[in-house]
Amino acid sequence: MAEESSRKYLLGNDAIAHACLESGIDFVSGYPGTPSSEVIDRLRAQKDPAYYLEWSVNEKVAFENALAASWCGLRSIVTMKHVGLNVAADPLMTSSSTGTKGGFVILSADDPFAHSSQNEQDSRMYAKFAQIPCLDPASVQEAHDFIKNAWDISEKFALPVLFRPTTRICHSKSDVELGTPMPSERKGAFEKNPKQYVVVPAHTRPLHAELTKKQDGVAKYLVDSGYNRAEIRGKKAVIAGGISASYVEEILPEDISFVKIGAYPIDREWLAEVVAQHEEILVVEELMPVIEEAVLAAANGVAVHGKLDGTLPHEGEFSTALVAKALAAVGFAENTYPESPVPAEVPARPAILCPGCLHRSVFYAMKKVFKDGIFPSDIGCYTLGLQLGAVDTTICMGASITVGSGIAHSVEGAEVVSTIGDSTFLHTGVNGLINAVYNNANQTVIILDNRITAMTGHQPNPNTGMTACGVESPKVSLEEIARACGVKFVEAVDPYDLTHL
Image (cartoon, rainbow, N blue to C red; front, top):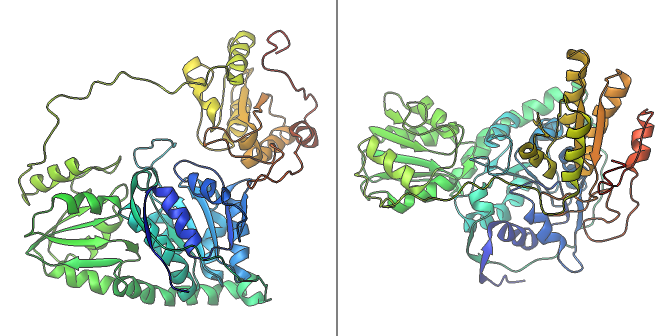
């Protein structure tokens, strides 16, 4: 069937979702997290989809579901934000050894500048760690095209493929050339192969050796396929990857070579040949110096500028203006990029809880009752209790109860009140509650139950009574879970009943 193209103005995540449809996706799982959430939100809005789709209880669960679908010969994708990959790191690190059957794509959306995240980690490091291919698009169009091809790469090398869009890709809009959705007709079947899928030490050792053998072939394929390419124009060069490559292309002088890195691993022989043709190189990439370290390894006396010599920052988002300053700083070009004549004067507006939010009354009561309380909290809307003096710690999903336990055991007589949302409790909070009960950590745990995963866009969870596709499902009882963990006193309270609260 010939593929027909059309052009639409789309959000990056919508373009990514459309590419999933064009690729004949069979299985979709994930956990909500900005800036990745809209991909599944768009896919779950399709009428009568030819694929299975779920919001999973956490990223590890989602990853293992999608990996299993791949082992059954289906094309699968798991979606999450960058910190979600930490939760899924255990199966990630072994899935590269077991390999895949159907194409398996891991969408891990990074968040430079931490627009809505607790850190600015770089998912490319996980790809290097796990020894799997990583695609790093520079535009919304590339995001569409790269992920559409990611399943082919996965199936060619029998490896998971990490797809790493950033916030500026996920949440930008652009004209995108689209193909035709191709519903899959695949039927899943699991073929037993213990030497591949049962990772006892005797099986793991040869699997690791096989993984190592694949690396050179993957790197050369990424060059041959045009993901990594060089335009040699002179003795000076700019090497850039991800969204930064788009900033560079916008202002790079014609006499400066341009090397674009769109995928990893980078072929070392190819890179050495490119580097050897230049006398001075500027490397532009957000967050970790992944490309820069590879260039330095191949430099052999060539001057290399970037993060490691202080030309560019290690943190935050880049911009065309920042690239222009860097080009001027190393003497590659004059900075003719126009600056705003008047600095933007925007009043500070810290994020606040929505009007009528049930969390506000809970925080009010907490501070009234526990005047000397210590308040560990978690990831969700209720983190905004920071503005109300009701949040003392937040580090990662599910950490409120565990941090509360650590404080309770460390500070004699501490009044510890830990707050956690329903979705976060089901994500990684239950283990912490079991541990607190088992080790007699004296604290009060408040589960702020709004029966939805709210901050990321009101996605359903196991406490909602509805699946991602709107199908009615059993509603878990948070009270029964708490009692099953061994908690002696459990009470459900209406947050608007301040007297009872």
